[in-house]
Figure 1 (tube, rainbow, N blue to C red):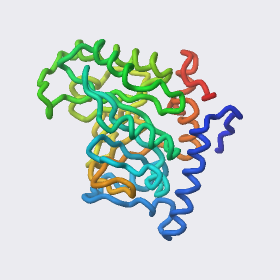
Figure 2 (cartoon, rainbow, N blue to C red; figure 1 turned 180 degrees about the vertical axis):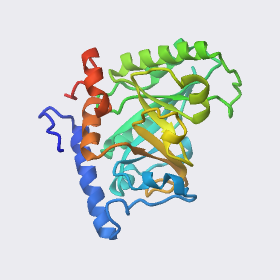
Figure 3 (cartoon, one colour; figure 1 turned 30 degrees about the horizontal axis):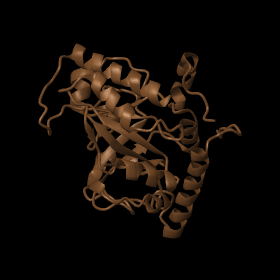
Figure 4 (tube, one colour; figure 1 turned 30 degrees about the vertical axis):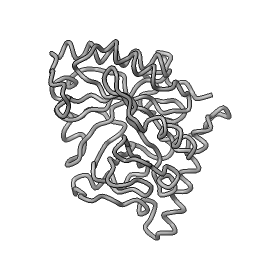
Length: 278
């Protein structure tokens, strides 16, 4: 069913409509159908093949991708990008500001993520995020990246109660700063150890590169799915994480307009969230 958007819908939503049209045109030119324009994956896994057939495709980037050509990626059928902004209490991705501006100028919906570390206070990390990430009403909701810090110098593993306290403080500050309900990104290990069985009103973005998310996350509802880390996308040098939004084009436009998963709007709207973009 098509959704009628209000006249006050933001420019980023109008840009998304154009992106959908560009994806369809690129697909027609390639003769591969709507999804044939961006099939790239250096090591595809058959158990996530469904993700490649879903209409709203995206990427996430950090300094490792260097000079991303967002206009080229958008023209090839990429509908959104999440980009690393901050980590811990004192790190900013060196490409964040450039990526933030370039994606906006290319008309690609973009959101910023903070990588949570467990060796500094949540209050310090929250202050660092608000200091370095613009409160841009045209942006996607911010993302809190929740993983164990196995590849960093921080090896601390707080108790479940302590971790949840830190997480909820971060989410509260990020929402207050941006005006949008943050997205929670996580992987299987952290979800199992800390998040499983816990209620959050937030949208979830789940990593699952060898199975569909419901097989790995105890049927945790998800809005975004990171299905490969070996993706190949026009405009991006080397390999890149690829992601998919759960729904169709109407669902996507509703998400862009409200910052909420359309399936959760009825429950969240009474709390003052999910207002249409001006």
